[in-house]
Image (cartoon, rainbow, N blue to C red; front, side, top):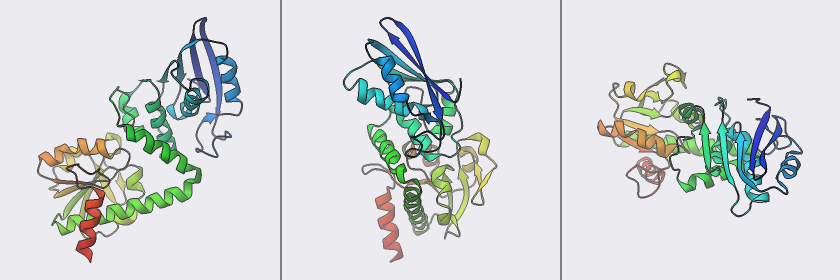
Length: 294
């Protein structure tokens, strides 16, 4: 699959038609979304010429989901506002997004908007992109959150700085809360974008951070902010008192995977859990920690 081209297959009443959209990291759309391969100028016109006067039964977008997002949005809002053909993404090669938060968000949103996602490597789609391509249902609010994140990327540097400050404060208060509860040996679950942005909270905390925990086996043994990245199994052997989940968009999934810690009697906290959850939500952590430091 050519990385510089997005292949679109149209299954029509008169046969199959193919449209190849050129992609570029300096596309006119990159100023809004980010410097990853996106459709070049003229893409809408090319799609319009192919779609007009045809009865389209199915549309297959063959390429990376982050490059599929704009054509998919155009299909849903320009040519097929109501109903329309099935739209699927054929994810031929799962690339590492190289820590591009916006690209990950765009890819996840595209997968949510598509009717079907066919992926060559479901495991890598989850580990690298946070995309569950196996067909599992996703909470509807995630699509709204992802869309909001993408719109916010129009002022990427400012927005990331503001989010990083919020994330740092949330984690700092959670660690204070651990100390108040007597949890002295703490593991941080998640070594992705969120944890890379909160280093200030991990510098000289009042408790002892024993490790960072991540599900990507390739990262085990690496160090981030001076702490070793280990597996959940390894973390269980370290005598942890508590585990704090350091993630935002995939927090719910990490909470489910952290059941191994709860089953072992290890307190588990999350920063952004919704009300009604058995987790220590952000509001609870913030309130208790503030009361403890007053």
